[in-house]
Length: 142
Image 1 (tube, one colour):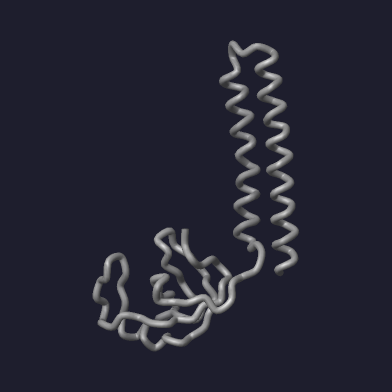
Image 2 (tube, one colour; image 1 turned 90 degrees about the vertical axis):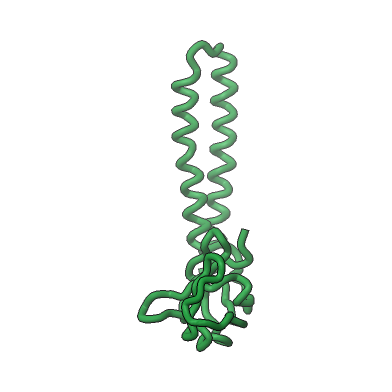
């Protein structure tokens, strides 16, 4: 899990020096040093914890900053539209759950089938409640 999320306000605090020298997975250039002290918004978070910042680009291409090179100025409150999208996608998985019941229920008793369907009904209710809460919070923070 990364320290930062999309929408966080961050400041570039330090960057190693050197021109396009590989440091592990990261490449950096001397021109990145010009961004020390710059405050911007995180626009992308990679699975390895590196981030892109809206105001830190070279010829339109965003620099990728290691999470140790930046510091949090202000965390984004609540939920983003990315969170909302994730909850919508979670609800789509219900279709796959129904397909499993349909295809794998051969030989199941009526009681087993009803228990599976009742469980899916409750799961569906919980997922849509969570989706709606995320929607409300995303709208508040807009």
